[in-house]
Length: 163
Length: 432
Image (cartoon, rainbow over the protein chains, first blue to last red):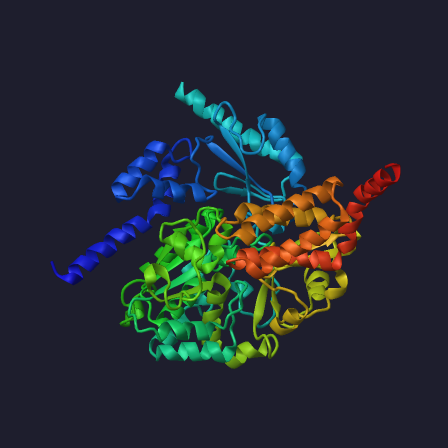
């Protein structure tokens, strides 16, 4: 085989391995429990022909990738200074009270996971939270309850139609 | 969601271009892509020369001259080169890149295409943080629209030049905004920084010469090319030409994104752009440059927004975040928040950052709890200096900025927090 062909082959393989972060995110997005399971880590390692430790090392480094099952909806509360000063503590207290969990936990019905997040880039509307891909700015302890109710209602509707 | 944007008759980010749901047609109807049309028929070096003459500097925080960076990539003998747009806007208090990408995405794409033509790149990436999924969607749609119109992809505008752009999603790491950590992240590794040199302009993505620029920097390019370097220099000052996007937040009446010409004072930003303090409060401190920036008292606010004058006064312009605190805010609580943030984002690669932050966090925690002794404030300062001097990358070096500046201006608050324990200590001595 020509040197050039060998080099091209190597480059392709190397680039596929380099797609690892995007693959991990895609696998997580496709998971109903919003996480990358140990089986998935093994599968990814096998198909990219890299060691499991390599996949695990990347997966565990990034805050956005979870190696534990999470709820159907992920509630992210901004914990940085502009939101902190705008009343994040009260918002977080209401969320913890309403969900019956603390930051970092998942509700027992597996509907919600509550996480802290570094700056959502919405300091013009702090305090800000994000539920899945939707940003909620200028939230108040009252509005957070209303927002949460909408998600709960939606979850109930889904359950009803399923049964 | 779109807040006020200051609009001069002359500005780089024209308000008329902002759209809730941006369309290519709208952008073009205001002269969008004229710069690219004009540039593609000329020598790529012209772009670099114009940007150098305009004095454009990196708007992500490091303020490196953009023309020079492009020249370094262009001069490289390696034919495969990349352009990366750093859209990992993680600096707490900053939301300018979110606005550019959400409301004027084509201005960014045109700038990127011009940059690619200038350095001879055929492939570009926009590294967008994971916290911005809706922004990623807008950019994907915009790339598709530009490609369909022949403004991206093969033979752009019928010319020989081809350039493709792809979105790369971050995964929640602040450190990946550091350019070499960003490269590691794109290569599928942990987002840890690499030793510089070699700089990305020589050895960047997959070892190829790479131009990495912030969103705001790239979005400046098309206006400079279409209106010329002397027009750009007519905005701002001779030391710092052009404008800067300022993300104003905190206890001001009108939080929002403002395009501010260089030479404006920080006080003007708060009083005129931000409409003064909310509910008649008074300014206690202003955090400039985000979490990695400094905390300054009101009397430093007459400093003008200029690279030189800010540097002389130890103010970091950084990403352009201005976060205002009123007299009810605790400096210690805010610094504690910053340190906790950095502790979480530190990658652990180097000892000064990893351990220094841990120690700083412990001392501040003790200060807030009223358990610290006066000598610990000095220790805190020593640890911070060590971080600033010896940390491997910009994260650790900058992590100390808010600590050092707050110790400089608000030392009293630190010492008052110790007073209780010192008294306790003295009392114990007396009884013994």
